[in-house]
Image: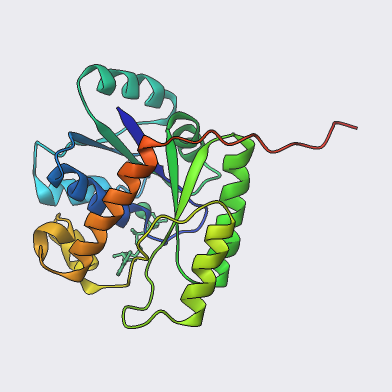
Length: 220
Ligand SMILES: Nc1ncnc2c1ncn2[C@@H]1O[C@H](COP(=O)(O)OP(=O)(O)OP(=O)(O)O)[C@@H](O)[C@H]1O
Ligand SMILES: [Mg+2]
């Protein structure tokens, strides 16, 4: 079983959206997927209520119970767990960062998001956890210099999962219906992006990298 957490200190960067869309794309590709919703906003839980699909379970798990929940899911034959989290300075996000194989850090192509991503990366490096960035909500029509700069910044900070994800109404419409874009518009561009993103994530999970913990200054 592989475990992936969507984490970032920045609100609204697309953690819940990507968790849901990736879960659907992975399931369509043959994975047995389980979603864990650790965010008190309960975006994924509400998405699941609209979906009403027993093959895509979503469960709220408190920080203290996450490790046990993952052990039980592994025994139960789940292949992929995707964990959605609130901001990184919460016990829930910290538990997810510690417990999961790989942390995905979504960021929009804005300097405030890139700066926040650096903070999240710092936390993950301190924990010696593996991570990759996703550039989300990019302008759909062009690869502007701002987007290219954002991609380069995240690449240099430790690796960007491709493709760049555009800002598309299909992501918002799919969420409203309790779906992923691969279900709502299977031939659409958002669906293509999510299939390619799942392929990148799957390859990334097959080559786990253990990052060296960041050296902390010696105590005075
Ligand atoms: N690629 C995208 N294209 C268009 N809209 C998007 C995309 N990704 C996310 N959104 C929209 O941006 C908003 C924030 O996304 P989302 O709720 O997934 O972020 P989040 O990181 O989970 O936020 P929070 O920190 O509040 O939990 C939502 O309205 C969502 O529909
Ligand atoms: Mg969310």
